[in-house]
Amino acid sequence: MVSSTHPRVGFVGVGKLGRPMAQRLMEFGFDLIVFDTDDAATSQFERTSVSIAKSLENLVMECEIICLCLPGPDEMKKVLLGQGGVEVNIRPGTLIIDHTTNSPALVREVEKRLKLRKAAMVDAPVSGGVEGAAKGSLTTLVGGDLVDFERARGLLECFSNTVLHVGPIGTGTVAKLMNNLAAFALDQVIAECLTIGESAGIEANRLLQALQQSAIGKGGNLHERIPETFMKGDFSPRFTLAGAHKDLHLAVEMADEGEVPVKIARNVLNELKAALSMGLGDRDASIAMTLQEERSGIHISNRPVKK
Image (tube, rainbow, N blue to C red; front, top):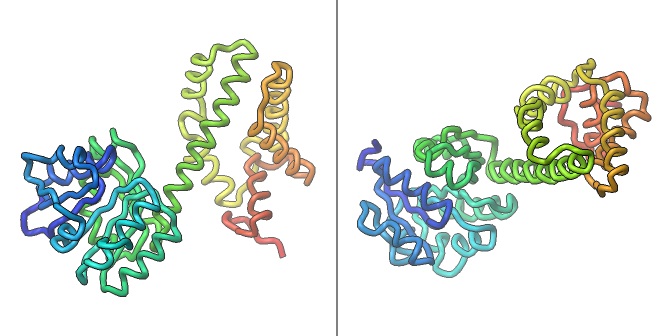
């Protein structure tokens, strides 16, 4: 349990996600005060050890650490920079922990303004949802100065089983947005797979089970193939580009035969075809990922840079 000698913590935004996070802090014995514009949200803390702030100004003046868990950039900007908000009332030495899935540019702007008032900030969006917050099993991705991260770590561990410092201010938000982009892009390509599969004679729930038990469902690409091939610049063939192109061609052909419209699958096939046309067919299929490196001019793998 956290002793009462620890700094008082304010929690702004105790809705669907913020409430179980704040409740975890309560269970760990933090001296906690909460604020939300929705009285129904704060009413969940009545008759507990948690204080309910009458105003945002009241909370800011009383706390050394302030957590924010707000719907998005507009709400965060209003709370931090708006009239009667955090910025105008903040005391030197206060640490802001922003859990909002936010705009990195806004996070960096706010952090600069808080520094002028001798306050600090980390961005710490979370992954794992309401269930993870309640169980204390969130993954929290933190951007900010290392000293501020260490100051926040003990609090974050109350509702997280993974707390990862990913870089300077704003990078926690970047990591969270890229996680969501990857997750929702995967949702869309799986929708294409399930509809193609149904048209070709496999019931969608059966196909979903097959995917869950195959490499994609077990995270093989993310945990093994990409780190060991693309990121290391090692394209000795595990699964050749020519083989991948053949399989994707057959999959898209199957979609065409079933008159199933697909966008993502066809784009991926075209990407593999472009890499194949460069004479890379006998290399590992992950070499097709280098096309994005070349287009963006951002070199992220360990392969030699072309001069």
